[in-house]
Structure formats: C-alpha cells, structure tokens
Image (cartoon, rainbow, N blue to C red):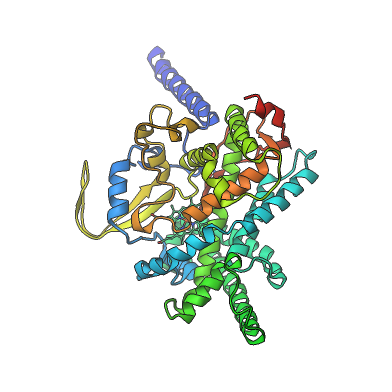
Length: 463
Ligand code: HEM
C-alpha cells in the first residue's frame, strides 16, 4: 500500500514541479511561441523551436549555399503568389531587375511619414481610452503605407480598395494558417473538397480582381497623361510606386506583363503582416523595458527637439539606438519563423550529412535564440548591437543568401519612421505584462497590453 502511494505521489510532485516551472517560464516570456490556440508541440519539434536543432552555422551554410525554396503545400501558395519573385524558377533574373527598384522605393519616406502622422493623431483622440485597439490602428496604417508604396501615393480612386485589400489579406492569412495546421488538408483530395480551399480561392480571386482593376486604371491614367502633356511624360521619381516601376520595366521588355498582378500581391502580402507584427512587438518590448525606452526617447528627442517634422533618410542613419531596438525585436520576435530550402547536392554539415534532394526547414526563431547569443539570449538587450568589439552572430530574421528578403531595407526604413512618430509623441507601457508570442502564419504578439500617454520629454532629458 505504502509503495503504491509512493508511486503515485512522486510522479504527482514531479508533474507539479514541471508544470509550475513551465508556467513560470511561459509567464517570463521564455518559452517558444504558442502555435495557434496552444497547438500541441510533439516529438522533436520543441527542440527544433527551442534551438537545439537550429544550429546557426549549419543553417547559414544551407540557407546561403542553396537557393531553391520548398513549399509544404504548393497548391494554395502557388494560387496566391503565381509566378512572382517568390515562386518563379527564374528568380535570379527577376531579382536583378527588382533589386534596383527596391533601392529606389527605400528612399521614398513621404508616404510612411504621412500615414504615421495620421496614426499619431488618431492615438491623440483615443488617449483616454484604455480599451483602444493599438493593433488595429497599427495594421490600418501599415496596410495604407504598403498600398501606397505599391500602387499609388495619392490617387483617390484607389482609396476604396484599401479596406477590401486588408480584409482579403487578413482572411487569406488565417486560411493559409488553417490549411497548413490541419493535417487532413495535406491530402490533395480532401483539400480540393474543403471549405478552406473555397475560402482561399475566393480571397485570392478578390485580390486578383482588385489588383487587375488598379493596374488597368493606372495604365489608362499614365496613357492619358502622356497624350495630354509632354511635361508630364514622366512621373516624378519621388512619387513612383512599385506598380510604376513594373510598368516601365514591362515596356522595356524586361518584366513579363502577365506576372505584374501577382508580384504586386506578393509584395503587399509580404510587407503588411511582417511590419505590423514587428511594430507591435517592438512597442510591447519597449513598454515592458522602460529604461530602454527612455534611452531611445532621449536619442529621438536630441534629433527632433520637439519638432514634428518628417523623418528623413539621413535621420535614419543616425538613430543607432533605434536600429538596435529594431534588431533586437526582430531577433526575439522574427515575424517569419522559418524558411525552407531544397538541398540539390550532398552536403556535409557539422554533425550529419544531407543527401541531394533533401528538403530543409531552417528555424529562424531557434537560430535567433541559440546559445551563440549568450546566456542572456532570451533577454531584450540592445547593448549586443552597440559598439560591439566582437562579431555579432548572424541575425536570421530576413533569411539567408541570395534568396533573403528583398524588402529588408524598405521594411527597416518604414519601421523606423513609424516608431519615431509614435515615440516622439507618446510614452508606451504594458503595465508590467511580459510579451508572449503566438505562431500563426506569422509570429506576432499573443495579446495586446500597450497603453500610451503623452511623452514626457523632461524625463527623457534627465537620462
Ligand atoms: C519586418 C519585415 C520583414 C521580414 C522580417 C521579412 C522576412 C523575410 C524572410 C525570412 C524571407 C525568406 C528569405 C529566405 O528564404 O531566405 C523573406 C522573403 C521575401 N520578402 Fe520579406 N520580410 C519583411 C518585409 C518585407 C517587405 C516589406 C517586402 C516587400 C515589400 C518583402 C518581400 C519579400 C519577398 C518578395 C521575398 C521573397 C524573396 C525571394 O524569394 O527571392 N518582405 N522575407
């Protein structure tokens, strides 16, 4: 009888200690993101997410030596992105054409300055409201910024599409996550008869149709400008959108007309959730690390001295503490938590060999929190990015090698402008709540705790 009780009591105690420690770690924000609504993480998956199977050296070797991407479920992804850069077999040629376009887009900050100014005004109107939804305000401004950068900066005819675009993208993002996380959907037959496929198809169709209409209208308006006036033959460079550049490249015969719609969709889709989630995570981290926020506000205050002027491209280079805050946010909260590669020839890694034809998942979340970052790998510590004599480990948040994110610099510029606008007017806090992450199609905050109040610059001055 005694032995029997011992057998029951000891496992119960152990289980209790395990659950208690796990809960504590979770509350401290040290556990991997919850997948969906607490998706069970089975087998070795937790090791992979935690970093044990995310060797940064091996992952960087694979990520930069192999450029072909693999998709767990090709059909829905292909339906959405068509033959855009992400999917086209001739991605190399496409990148050569698109990279200079992105270099141009990076320096056009008017749109994001304007959208950020509007958002900050919206915050002012809601300053008293504790239930104010930061997330939706941020997401609205980011979709407007992405929309304007992609299609048009000012054209009012296009404004009616913005909300519809946001709805369609939000819906497709949810649907794609449901499709990937439902094991039955990995069977083609079941997928083809499923509601999820219809939902995905309808969302994609809506995006295609809207984008198609915008492209047609844009072509017509460019043509009428050309017909009407010689002076207006060229859009002023600073106003050019991705669509303008693609139409020019098409005319030069270096970009296929039939891929324009999908390219535009892929760009908005790639930028919207990644930028929104990063802004939210960064504000959350700053709101729970007030000493970091104060130093950052001091840097911003010294640059703007109370002025509400637009943020310029030169300002961005000097805001080093802001850059560090963003890098650290992207390290701890990479919106894209994994990437894939096809290994097309045998490769010897540190501990094992991969055969030609293998497909690999490279776990960005785990790589970014690997031991190489030090014993404080889970902490929000900006110093690791500032004046480091030693080499900083590779930050995997934008991927690897030739296929790494083409929107990296554009997104960093947009993120910095948004944060300057918010932080020069507001202090943010999270009432002591620690940031917890959630893995859906993109990694983002599991809940919202950001509150804001008018900035207290005098405090910042005293740092
Ligand atoms: C915080 C913001 C962003 C993050 C963290 C991010 C992250 C990533 C990652 C991890 C990849 C995969 C790279 C690889 O496989 O090695 C990627 C690819 C890509 N990203 Fe981003 N991204 C961001 C913003 C953007 C923006 C704003 C755009 C466009 C406007 C964009 C467009 C793309 C495209 C087109 C690809 C595919 C590139 C290719 O296949 O060659 N991204 N991004």
